[in-house]
Image (cartoon, rainbow, N blue to C red; front, side):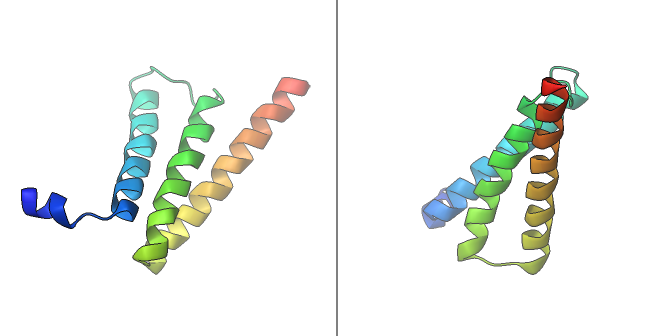
Length: 88
């Protein structure tokens, strides 16, 4: 395990934090700690996705890049939808 930790780069760390953020948001909605209609859900997903996308700059993978692109777009759509509902 220490060998693995010794080889991690800053990009790996950022991407891993992003994965933890997205997973925590999903877990929180499944456990009913967080409502998916709450602004925190798409914001957490957006931040986590940007972190994961950052790590892809250094270790590109087309499948992961497409997933992060769609995750970012869906998160932005969720934030816009929330703000529209809030102002209506």
